[in-house]
Image (cartoon, rainbow, N blue to C red; front, side, top):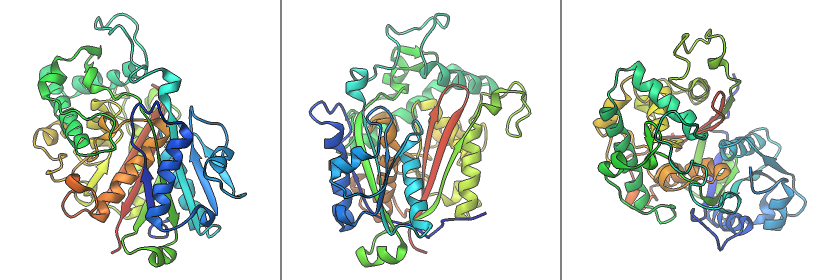
Length: 400
């Protein structure tokens, strides 16, 4: 199998502040993010030979980015892969460089969701459905189904399961408090999470990420060019995207699941991780991945993803959370910038925002969030509908 391991380098990244950016347009945010990336890389818009722009609700064509940045007749491709759009734009940019066709390219993701949905959290049902019988709305009801299946499979009490989800959310809110660009700046307690209104059982208000406005960007080039631009560039070890077709919900003959167990975990994440680990040469992700940004659209999704990525044995992630493994001070910190829950989730921008944090951590520039001895970093995006998902995984690292 071919690999782009160490054939592509990130030399610049940028992200605007995520939030309810009523005073900024999609263009404003994209310009902020891209020009931070240009400055970080020491390049100018005229140096960009091609670009990939992730948009879901906030644009239709790559020409929007050309207009926003005043790019001069370069090829720009609009990418849409639901919540994986940002990582997919980045993957395309990496392959544009690795193929030898382009030397310096841009990957950008932008989403202006407040104008589209009318405010933070608009996609959760209101009034809150706590009956468990009445119809409630996706995506929360779909992800709640995964959570209840997990509880049932491993014989977990609601009280213990909810306490573990609370620990995840307290962690992510704490990390977001340390990040000036995060949407939500509020410390919460485990009791806040446990006592919050139920949105779709067993998920409560604090278990669900809201929506945000935001943009993020990356400048990608060859390692040879990177050496001439800066000393602390970061290498790409793997970049994969997997799109499921609902295999785990069909005949029950999928190799990853058994009949009656199809909705406990996410086969798309497992397949994407297997491909990324093979490309990066990773044998033991629990030991080799030093830190990660995971798609915590819901607290239970982060929990299940620990297992699908091999960070925790199946059925034992709950014990790792209780032991503090994934905190800033733990053995394998996760969502050091606050994750989707605290930093925010402007869909197409989220994947690149994850890379922005991993990049800063690998450079030792994460400020009060900085972890010890970062080596290999993983970003994970998950998006789609209740019966099939798309998953993106990117692995970054320094020079050996």
